[in-house]
Image (cartoon, rainbow, N blue to C red; front, side):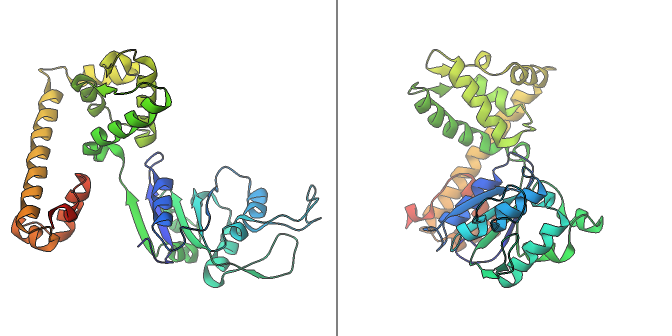
Length: 301
């Protein structure tokens, strides 16, 4: 879907990485050489957001001492990411709908019609369909945004990603704080796997930054993690250590699953359809597992 002009609506809890997905869509599209402009619709007052998006002319309102370009004009040929789209006022929703339908907009205080060629990617941590039913979001705008919908699951429902993300953030913060070759111990990783991460990936990123700062050796241990993470692990590991058993069992399953996928791809010489058929797994599910384990089918061709 990246290399199209289709509008994309990304839904997911705060901290799941919706802006990263929007940026990935941009850099994998034909618009990659143009601007990617993120706008947080919930962080700017409605009257200022209109000016930020569409620009204004001198004298349009108090303080408008000069003409100003808006983000749609600045994003010409590129992508604009509208985060927290559910917070946009009804008046601005009407103006956005016009841009999406015709490409037309005008600066605040101006009667001149301008045109833009901008791909719109929107995101929200709320259920827009529910807001439509409650009369809090325009139905026509919802359907105009909802051409392609991406639902980003919370981190607690994809804990298999935690070890991969931990290693990524370890690389980032080890470099930032000049602590090379840092590793995370199995006990510390078990603490992280026992946590539900209400703040999602953003919370995990902050935890790893905290741990990197606190450690003075080469290995991150449980006592380097924030106190609440250690406490979660203590609670989960009580009553005959059920969490440790679950974690161990999950790791065995994941190891088997990854090796099974690899074997199927080797036999099929990288042909995903044939590998999925041999595995007895639906193509979409097989492809999802490949992505989860970071498997590149081209390595087997």
